[in-house]
Image 1 (spheres, helix red, strand yellow):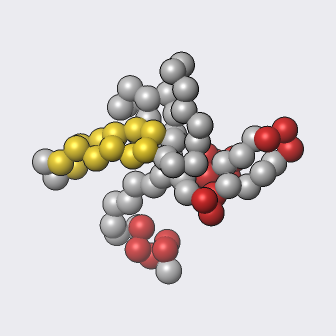
Image 2 (spheres, rainbow, N blue to C red; image 1 turned 180 degrees about the vertical axis):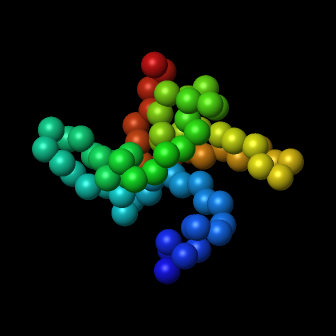
Length: 72
């Protein structure tokens, strides 16, 4: 179902509680980061957990809720 839809409709993603997959060494979100390419670098972010983009005259801010943010 999703493949048919996403082939025709643009979609941007952000991580959520269903993407939390505890891995060895506490490396969570490995599957999320491997599956989805997001414009983090283009928006000045160094993380796929927060980024922004413009579309249709609007500015969208994608801010993940399940990641600890710090000042660095």
